[in-house]
Length: 267
Image 1 (cartoon, helix red, strand yellow):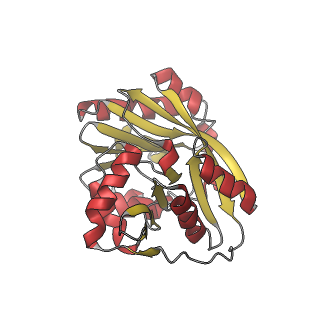
Image 2 (cartoon, one colour; image 1 turned 90 degrees about the horizontal axis):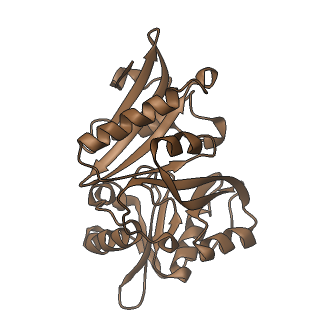
Image 3 (spheres, helix red, strand yellow; image 1 turned 60 degrees about the vertical axis):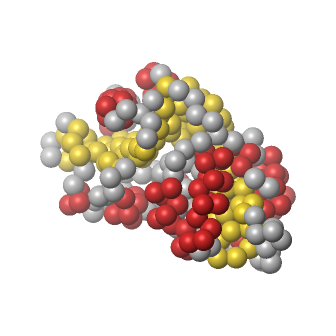
């Protein structure tokens, strides 16, 4: 049985995600449950939660996230069942474009439902803090920057994500040129830390700011050559690969502007 997640279900849900995700799922759920653009669901067997799945939706674009099945029950069709349920839910919400970030394990399941891979992503981790000097072009963001943030985020992702920018910009940083044009921004509290930029120097400088702390993870499209080269030359640990997949209408996005995450649910 699949039903909507209750607040009382959250405690204990840090166990199902794979260890290498290094993901505080309970914190994530507590941050989003109750928002009108988010829904979380669980699979119940014998009164026990054995699977989860989430959706984010705004206008005609939806994201699927955290489709996780108890390790002992994988390979029995539950991942397919949850994914199909989420796809149908987003269809009912009028989403003409549905997107997800797939692990190697999940990709074959999503292909069966009709998702197509459109980009590869690479993960990098900071194991120790890096001694980077923050650029003088970087400053804290404030409410006067919001329209610029909205515009750059839309150029990168092809979505209306103003509701998410509003939620996280107050702890963020922007890279500005001498004319006060926004060339890139970093939102550390949006998922694992969103970094977007339409300028390679700004993007790399913001990555330096992000990875000046230890145990920081970044996932970016391999089409972002400047970002990939920064990580290779910085000696950060190269992690897992995954892919961006889409069902339905293509949306206009620019992977070269995405320096860290840039997805609908984790930055």
